[in-house]
Figure 1 (cartoon, rainbow, N blue to C red):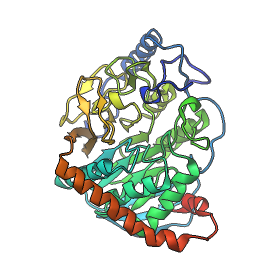
Figure 2: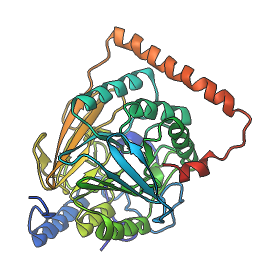
Figure 3: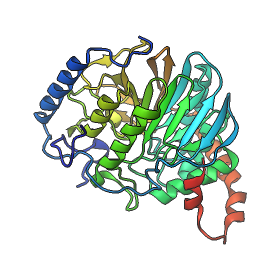
Length: 401
Protein backbone atom coordinates (compact mmCIF):
# COMPACT_ATOMS: atom_id res chain seq x y z
CA UNK A 1 0.00 0.00 0.00
CA UNK A 2 1.06 3.57 -0.63
CA UNK A 3 2.43 5.44 2.33
CA UNK A 4 -0.15 7.96 3.45
CA UNK A 5 0.23 11.43 4.90
CA UNK A 6 3.53 12.64 6.22
CA UNK A 7 6.34 10.10 6.51
CA UNK A 8 9.65 10.94 8.11
CA UNK A 9 12.04 11.47 5.25
CA UNK A 10 15.33 13.22 4.88
CA UNK A 11 16.05 16.92 4.24
CA UNK A 12 15.49 19.19 1.30
CA UNK A 13 17.05 19.11 -2.16
CA UNK A 14 20.34 20.98 -2.18
CA UNK A 15 19.40 22.96 -5.27
CA UNK A 16 16.91 24.72 -2.97
CA UNK A 17 19.33 25.48 -0.11
CA UNK A 18 18.03 28.11 2.21
CA UNK A 19 14.35 27.54 1.32
CA UNK A 20 11.73 26.62 4.08
CA UNK A 21 15.01 -11.89 -18.41
CA UNK A 22 12.34 -10.92 -21.08
CA UNK A 23 8.85 -10.92 -19.62
CA UNK A 24 10.14 -11.00 -16.05
CA UNK A 25 9.48 -7.96 -13.87
CA UNK A 26 11.22 -9.18 -10.74
CA UNK A 27 15.00 -9.49 -10.64
CA UNK A 28 14.71 -11.12 -7.20
CA UNK A 29 11.89 -13.05 -5.50
CA UNK A 30 9.00 -10.81 -4.42
CA UNK A 31 9.38 -11.58 -0.72
CA UNK A 32 13.06 -10.71 -0.83
CA UNK A 33 12.36 -7.47 -2.71
CA UNK A 34 9.80 -6.41 -0.09
CA UNK A 35 12.19 -7.26 2.73
CA UNK A 36 14.93 -5.18 1.10
CA UNK A 37 12.60 -2.19 0.66
CA UNK A 38 11.38 -2.41 4.25
CA UNK A 39 14.96 -2.53 5.47
CA UNK A 40 15.86 0.40 3.21
CA UNK A 41 13.02 2.49 4.63
CA UNK A 42 14.13 1.74 8.19
CA UNK A 43 17.71 2.71 7.39
CA UNK A 44 16.59 5.88 5.60
CA UNK A 45 14.72 7.04 8.71
CA UNK A 46 18.00 6.86 10.62
CA UNK A 47 19.95 9.00 8.14
CA UNK A 48 20.82 12.65 8.92
CA UNK A 49 17.99 15.05 8.12
CA UNK A 50 15.28 12.39 8.15
CA UNK A 51 13.04 14.54 10.31
CA UNK A 52 12.76 17.45 7.89
CA UNK A 53 11.13 16.19 4.68
CA UNK A 54 7.73 14.82 3.77
CA UNK A 55 6.08 12.29 1.51
CA UNK A 56 3.40 13.26 -0.97
CA UNK A 57 0.14 13.94 0.86
CA UNK A 58 -3.58 13.79 0.14
CA UNK A 59 -5.07 16.54 -2.01
CA UNK A 60 -6.43 17.47 -5.42
CA UNK A 61 -4.06 18.45 -8.21
CA UNK A 62 -4.70 21.02 -10.90
CA UNK A 63 -5.52 19.36 -14.27
CA UNK A 64 -2.97 21.62 -15.98
CA UNK A 65 -0.41 19.95 -13.74
CA UNK A 66 -1.58 16.35 -13.55
CA UNK A 67 -3.91 15.48 -16.40
CA UNK A 68 -6.90 13.26 -15.79
CA UNK A 69 -7.15 9.78 -17.23
CA UNK A 70 -9.82 10.68 -19.76
CA UNK A 71 -10.03 9.44 -23.33
CA UNK A 72 -10.88 11.57 -26.37
CA UNK A 73 -11.62 10.77 -30.04
CA UNK A 74 -8.32 9.56 -31.52
CA UNK A 75 -6.24 11.51 -34.00
CA UNK A 76 -3.35 10.08 -35.99
CA UNK A 77 -0.20 11.42 -37.59
CA UNK A 78 3.42 10.60 -38.35
CA UNK A 79 5.94 11.54 -35.65
CA UNK A 80 9.56 10.81 -36.46
CA UNK A 81 9.93 7.12 -37.22
CA UNK A 82 6.57 6.32 -35.61
CA UNK A 83 2.89 6.36 -36.46
CA UNK A 84 1.13 8.08 -33.56
CA UNK A 85 -2.42 7.74 -32.31
CA UNK A 86 -3.42 10.31 -29.68
CA UNK A 87 -6.56 9.67 -27.65
CA UNK A 88 -6.89 11.86 -24.59
CA UNK A 89 -4.38 10.81 -21.95
CA UNK A 90 -3.02 8.01 -24.10
CA UNK A 91 -0.49 8.13 -26.94
CA UNK A 92 0.30 4.98 -28.90
CA UNK A 93 3.35 4.94 -31.15
CA UNK A 94 3.92 2.07 -33.57
CA UNK A 95 6.92 1.69 -35.79
CA UNK A 96 10.40 0.20 -35.70
CA UNK A 97 10.85 -2.95 -33.67
CA UNK A 98 14.01 -4.08 -31.93
CA UNK A 99 15.91 -2.08 -29.31
CA UNK A 100 14.26 1.20 -28.30
CA UNK A 101 16.77 4.03 -27.79
CA UNK A 102 15.73 7.07 -25.75
CA UNK A 103 17.59 10.31 -25.09
CA UNK A 104 17.14 11.51 -21.50
CA UNK A 105 17.55 15.02 -20.06
CA UNK A 106 16.53 16.89 -16.92
CA UNK A 107 17.11 20.26 -15.28
CA UNK A 108 17.95 22.42 -18.28
CA UNK A 109 16.90 25.41 -16.11
CA UNK A 110 17.59 28.34 -18.47
CA UNK A 111 18.03 29.28 -22.11
CA UNK A 112 21.48 30.79 -21.59
CA UNK A 113 23.73 30.66 -24.65
CA UNK A 114 25.87 28.04 -22.90
CA UNK A 115 22.85 25.86 -22.15
CA UNK A 116 21.55 26.12 -25.71
CA UNK A 117 24.98 25.12 -26.97
CA UNK A 118 24.95 22.14 -24.63
CA UNK A 119 21.54 21.14 -25.98
CA UNK A 120 23.03 21.11 -29.48
CA UNK A 121 25.77 18.83 -28.15
CA UNK A 122 23.21 16.50 -26.62
CA UNK A 123 21.23 16.37 -29.86
CA UNK A 124 24.36 15.44 -31.82
CA UNK A 125 25.25 12.73 -29.30
CA UNK A 126 21.68 11.42 -29.37
CA UNK A 127 21.86 11.18 -33.17
CA UNK A 128 25.19 9.36 -32.97
CA UNK A 129 23.60 6.87 -30.53
CA UNK A 130 20.56 6.23 -32.73
CA UNK A 131 18.04 7.86 -30.41
CA UNK A 132 14.41 7.48 -31.52
CA UNK A 133 12.67 9.67 -28.91
CA UNK A 134 13.63 12.06 -26.10
CA UNK A 135 12.42 12.28 -22.49
CA UNK A 136 12.74 15.55 -20.53
CA UNK A 137 12.17 15.10 -16.79
CA UNK A 138 11.26 18.64 -15.74
CA UNK A 139 12.79 22.03 -14.90
CA UNK A 140 13.10 22.93 -18.56
CA UNK A 141 12.92 26.65 -17.79
CA UNK A 142 11.19 29.25 -15.64
CA UNK A 143 9.90 31.51 -18.43
CA UNK A 144 7.92 30.75 -21.55
CA UNK A 145 10.79 31.90 -23.77
CA UNK A 146 13.29 29.68 -21.97
CA UNK A 147 11.10 26.61 -22.34
CA UNK A 148 10.30 27.38 -25.98
CA UNK A 149 13.96 27.92 -26.90
CA UNK A 150 15.13 24.72 -25.20
CA UNK A 151 12.41 22.52 -26.68
CA UNK A 152 12.86 24.04 -30.13
CA UNK A 153 16.46 22.84 -30.17
CA UNK A 154 15.46 19.38 -28.94
CA UNK A 155 12.56 19.07 -31.39
CA UNK A 156 14.40 20.05 -34.57
CA UNK A 157 15.44 16.48 -35.52
CA UNK A 158 11.74 15.50 -35.70
CA UNK A 159 11.80 12.68 -33.16
CA UNK A 160 9.11 12.59 -30.44
CA UNK A 161 9.99 14.76 -27.44
CA UNK A 162 8.11 13.95 -24.23
CA UNK A 163 8.22 16.63 -21.50
CA UNK A 164 6.92 16.91 -17.93
CA UNK A 165 6.81 19.87 -15.58
CA UNK A 166 9.24 20.01 -12.65
CA UNK A 167 9.29 22.03 -9.44
CA UNK A 168 10.32 25.34 -11.05
CA UNK A 169 7.80 26.02 -13.83
CA UNK A 170 4.48 27.80 -13.28
CA UNK A 171 1.70 25.65 -14.70
CA UNK A 172 0.29 28.25 -17.13
CA UNK A 173 3.77 29.24 -18.30
CA UNK A 174 4.59 25.60 -18.99
CA UNK A 175 1.30 24.98 -20.82
CA UNK A 176 1.67 28.16 -22.90
CA UNK A 177 5.25 27.27 -23.82
CA UNK A 178 4.28 23.76 -24.90
CA UNK A 179 1.42 25.16 -26.97
CA UNK A 180 3.79 27.61 -28.66
CA UNK A 181 6.38 24.96 -29.45
CA UNK A 182 3.74 22.58 -30.79
CA UNK A 183 2.67 25.13 -33.41
CA UNK A 184 5.92 24.47 -35.27
CA UNK A 185 6.92 21.16 -33.72
CA UNK A 186 3.93 18.84 -33.27
CA UNK A 187 6.44 16.14 -32.32
CA UNK A 188 6.59 17.67 -28.80
CA UNK A 189 4.22 16.08 -26.28
CA UNK A 190 3.07 17.51 -22.96
CA UNK A 191 3.23 14.62 -20.49
CA UNK A 192 1.29 16.65 -17.96
CA UNK A 193 -1.65 15.74 -20.18
CA UNK A 194 -0.50 12.62 -22.05
CA UNK A 195 -0.04 10.31 -19.10
CA UNK A 196 0.56 6.99 -20.87
CA UNK A 197 2.79 6.66 -23.93
CA UNK A 198 2.86 3.19 -25.42
CA UNK A 199 6.07 2.73 -27.40
CA UNK A 200 7.21 -0.48 -29.08
CA UNK A 201 8.39 -2.63 -26.18
CA UNK A 202 7.91 0.01 -23.46
CA UNK A 203 5.10 1.89 -21.70
CA UNK A 204 6.02 5.36 -20.40
CA UNK A 205 3.96 6.60 -17.43
CA UNK A 206 4.17 10.22 -16.26
CA UNK A 207 3.86 11.68 -12.77
CA UNK A 208 4.24 15.44 -13.35
CA UNK A 209 5.13 18.06 -10.77
CA UNK A 210 6.71 17.65 -7.35
CA UNK A 211 5.55 16.19 -4.05
CA UNK A 212 6.82 18.71 -1.49
CA UNK A 213 5.20 22.18 -1.76
CA UNK A 214 8.03 23.83 0.18
CA UNK A 215 10.28 23.40 -2.82
CA UNK A 216 7.90 24.33 -5.62
CA UNK A 217 9.38 27.60 -6.83
CA UNK A 218 6.44 29.24 -8.63
CA UNK A 219 3.36 30.33 -6.72
CA UNK A 220 1.31 28.50 -9.35
CA UNK A 221 3.65 25.53 -9.67
CA UNK A 222 2.57 21.91 -9.77
CA UNK A 223 2.14 19.62 -6.80
CA UNK A 224 1.05 16.01 -7.16
CA UNK A 225 -0.75 14.12 -4.42
CA UNK A 226 -1.23 10.56 -3.19
CA UNK A 227 -4.46 10.32 -5.18
CA UNK A 228 -2.45 10.96 -8.37
CA UNK A 229 -0.01 8.21 -7.47
CA UNK A 230 -2.82 5.75 -6.78
CA UNK A 231 -4.54 6.59 -10.08
CA UNK A 232 -1.29 6.01 -11.94
CA UNK A 233 -0.85 2.68 -10.17
CA UNK A 234 -4.19 1.50 -11.59
CA UNK A 235 -3.28 2.56 -15.14
CA UNK A 236 0.13 0.92 -14.87
CA UNK A 237 -1.39 -2.34 -13.73
CA UNK A 238 -4.25 -2.44 -16.23
CA UNK A 239 -3.07 -0.67 -19.38
CA UNK A 240 0.72 -0.69 -19.73
CA UNK A 241 1.90 -3.16 -22.34
CA UNK A 242 5.37 -4.58 -21.87
CA UNK A 243 7.76 -3.26 -19.22
CA UNK A 244 6.92 0.18 -17.87
CA UNK A 245 9.04 3.27 -17.26
CA UNK A 246 8.01 5.98 -14.81
CA UNK A 247 9.10 9.55 -15.53
CA UNK A 248 8.83 12.10 -12.72
CA UNK A 249 10.89 15.12 -11.72
CA UNK A 250 11.38 13.99 -8.14
CA UNK A 251 12.98 10.59 -7.51
CA UNK A 252 11.93 7.71 -5.30
CA UNK A 253 13.33 7.67 -1.81
CA UNK A 254 16.71 6.03 -1.51
CA UNK A 255 18.45 4.58 1.52
CA UNK A 256 22.08 5.29 0.75
CA UNK A 257 24.40 8.23 -0.02
CA UNK A 258 24.87 6.92 -3.56
CA UNK A 259 21.10 6.90 -4.28
CA UNK A 260 19.71 9.17 -7.01
CA UNK A 261 17.84 11.28 -4.43
CA UNK A 262 20.79 12.01 -2.13
CA UNK A 263 21.19 15.76 -1.58
CA UNK A 264 24.58 16.54 -0.10
CA UNK A 265 23.33 18.74 2.76
CA UNK A 266 20.02 16.98 3.36
CA UNK A 267 20.33 13.26 2.74
CA UNK A 268 17.77 11.15 0.88
CA UNK A 269 14.86 13.39 -0.12
CA UNK A 270 12.77 11.31 -2.52
CA UNK A 271 9.08 10.52 -2.22
CA UNK A 272 8.47 7.06 -0.69
CA UNK A 273 5.09 6.91 -2.37
CA UNK A 274 6.97 6.57 -5.66
CA UNK A 275 8.74 3.54 -4.19
CA UNK A 276 5.37 2.08 -3.27
CA UNK A 277 4.03 2.75 -6.77
CA UNK A 278 7.05 1.11 -8.38
CA UNK A 279 6.82 -1.90 -6.11
CA UNK A 280 3.05 -2.41 -6.31
CA UNK A 281 2.75 -1.83 -10.08
CA UNK A 282 6.03 -3.65 -10.79
CA UNK A 283 7.57 -0.78 -12.77
CA UNK A 284 11.11 -1.90 -13.63
CA UNK A 285 12.50 1.37 -15.04
CA UNK A 286 12.42 5.04 -14.11
CA UNK A 287 13.75 8.45 -15.17
CA UNK A 288 14.04 11.20 -12.55
CA UNK A 289 15.89 14.49 -11.98
CA UNK A 290 15.95 17.42 -9.53
CA UNK A 291 18.82 16.30 -7.28
CA UNK A 292 21.71 17.47 -9.43
CA UNK A 293 24.61 16.06 -7.46
CA UNK A 294 23.03 12.60 -7.29
CA UNK A 295 22.82 12.31 -11.08
CA UNK A 296 24.91 10.72 -13.77
CA UNK A 297 23.95 7.18 -12.80
CA UNK A 298 21.25 4.58 -12.38
CA UNK A 299 20.71 2.42 -9.32
CA UNK A 300 18.36 -0.19 -7.95
CA UNK A 301 15.32 1.09 -6.05
CA UNK A 302 17.11 1.29 -2.69
CA UNK A 303 19.99 3.27 -4.20
CA UNK A 304 22.54 0.95 -2.63
CA UNK A 305 23.63 -0.66 -5.89
CA UNK A 306 24.84 1.43 -8.83
CA UNK A 307 24.08 -0.14 -12.20
CA UNK A 308 27.20 -0.09 -14.39
CA UNK A 309 26.84 1.80 -17.66
CA UNK A 310 26.14 -0.20 -20.84
CA UNK A 311 24.93 -3.18 -18.80
CA UNK A 312 21.45 -4.58 -19.49
CA UNK A 313 19.52 -5.28 -16.29
CA UNK A 314 15.96 -6.11 -15.24
CA UNK A 315 15.53 -2.97 -13.12
CA UNK A 316 17.13 0.48 -13.12
CA UNK A 317 16.18 3.98 -11.97
CA UNK A 318 18.09 6.75 -13.74
CA UNK A 319 19.00 10.32 -12.85
CA UNK A 320 20.82 11.66 -15.94
CA UNK A 321 22.32 14.60 -14.06
CA UNK A 322 21.68 18.29 -14.79
CA UNK A 323 21.68 19.38 -18.42
CA UNK A 324 22.44 22.89 -17.15
CA UNK A 325 25.94 24.15 -17.97
CA UNK A 326 26.46 25.76 -14.54
CA UNK A 327 29.30 23.86 -12.79
CA UNK A 328 27.95 21.53 -10.13
CA UNK A 329 29.89 19.29 -7.77
CA UNK A 330 28.59 15.74 -8.01
CA UNK A 331 28.36 13.19 -5.20
CA UNK A 332 30.98 11.04 -6.93
CA UNK A 333 33.54 13.86 -6.68
CA UNK A 334 33.35 14.93 -10.32
CA UNK A 335 32.05 18.27 -11.60
CA UNK A 336 29.16 18.57 -14.03
CA UNK A 337 29.04 21.25 -16.71
CA UNK A 338 26.06 19.60 -18.36
CA UNK A 339 24.98 15.96 -18.57
CA UNK A 340 22.66 13.77 -20.63
CA UNK A 341 21.88 10.08 -20.90
CA UNK A 342 20.80 7.47 -23.41
CA UNK A 343 18.54 4.67 -22.23
CA UNK A 344 18.19 1.53 -24.35
CA UNK A 345 15.40 -1.00 -23.81
CA UNK A 346 15.87 -4.42 -25.35
CA UNK A 347 14.00 -7.67 -24.70
CA UNK A 348 12.55 -6.39 -21.43
CA UNK A 349 15.89 -5.19 -20.05
CA UNK A 350 17.46 -1.73 -20.03
CA UNK A 351 20.93 -0.20 -20.14
CA UNK A 352 22.11 3.41 -19.96
CA UNK A 353 25.07 5.58 -20.88
CA UNK A 354 26.01 9.06 -19.61
CA UNK A 355 27.35 12.01 -21.61
CA UNK A 356 29.38 14.61 -19.73
CA UNK A 357 29.74 17.93 -21.53
CA UNK A 358 33.18 19.55 -21.52
CA UNK A 359 33.62 23.21 -20.64
CA UNK A 360 32.99 25.52 -23.57
CA UNK A 361 36.00 27.01 -25.30
CA UNK A 362 36.09 30.71 -26.13
CA UNK A 363 35.21 29.89 -29.74
CA UNK A 364 32.27 27.77 -28.59
CA UNK A 365 31.04 30.56 -26.33
CA UNK A 366 31.00 32.90 -29.31
CA UNK A 367 29.07 30.29 -31.28
CA UNK A 368 26.67 29.90 -28.37
CA UNK A 369 25.92 33.63 -28.43
CA UNK A 370 25.05 33.39 -32.13
CA UNK A 371 22.78 30.40 -31.49
CA UNK A 372 20.87 32.25 -28.77
CA UNK A 373 20.51 35.32 -30.99
CA UNK A 374 19.20 33.24 -33.89
CA UNK A 375 16.53 31.64 -31.70
CA UNK A 376 15.43 35.03 -30.38
CA UNK A 377 15.30 36.44 -33.93
CA UNK A 378 13.24 33.52 -35.19
CA UNK A 379 10.77 34.02 -32.35
CA UNK A 380 10.30 37.76 -32.85
CA UNK A 381 7.82 37.66 -35.80
CA UNK A 382 5.60 35.19 -33.98
CA UNK A 383 5.66 37.31 -30.84
CA UNK A 384 4.68 40.41 -32.83
CA UNK A 385 1.81 38.56 -34.48
CA UNK A 386 0.54 37.39 -31.12
CA UNK A 387 0.70 40.85 -29.52
CA UNK A 388 -2.68 42.15 -28.55
CA UNK A 389 -4.47 38.81 -28.81
CA UNK A 390 -6.37 37.44 -25.85
CA UNK A 391 -4.58 35.12 -23.51
CA UNK A 392 -5.89 31.58 -23.48
CA UNK A 393 -3.06 29.38 -24.58
CA UNK A 394 -2.93 27.64 -21.22
CA UNK A 395 -6.24 25.95 -21.97
CA UNK A 396 -5.06 25.16 -25.48
CA UNK A 397 -1.86 23.75 -24.02
CA UNK A 398 -3.87 21.38 -21.89
CA UNK A 399 -5.53 20.00 -24.99
CA UNK A 400 -2.47 20.02 -27.23
CA UNK A 401 0.00 17.22 -27.72
